[in-house]
Length: 161
Image (cartoon, rainbow, N blue to C red; front, side, top):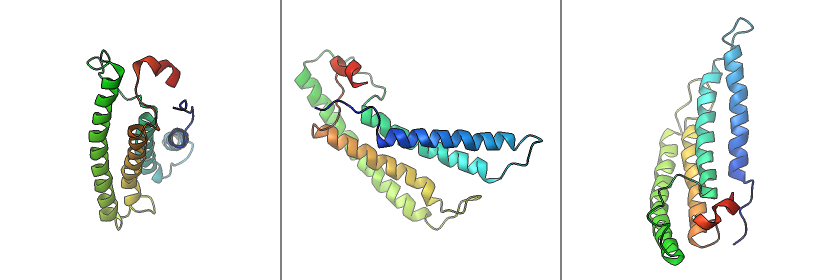
């Protein structure tokens, strides 16, 4: 298995969204002072950026397989059994994620004609964050199940990060 790349599209996008969020929040904060009147779109934009950043960030956590886990029950097992258990867990997780993809798609369709309060875009753009994140997560889980992606292994945690 190839070593895990340090940077990924998910991580880069989440980082850029975080930087843009900081800029929007600074505009919002300065707009509450006597310097100038802040634009009304900053509050909604900050909320949308936060949601997108968090959802794409979850996909990055899935890529690195660094989510919180209580592995003390399986870490004492032999490697083959541990891999089998994690593969079963991944298969169940994949089924849930694919169901969330379907829910995300239906939500985007349902909200397509709703317009945001202060932004000239559809509310579906906000809900698309969950859809995109679940598709990215499904991609990473499928790769992990097929043996192409990173798999949690306590002996290799230091080298993966």
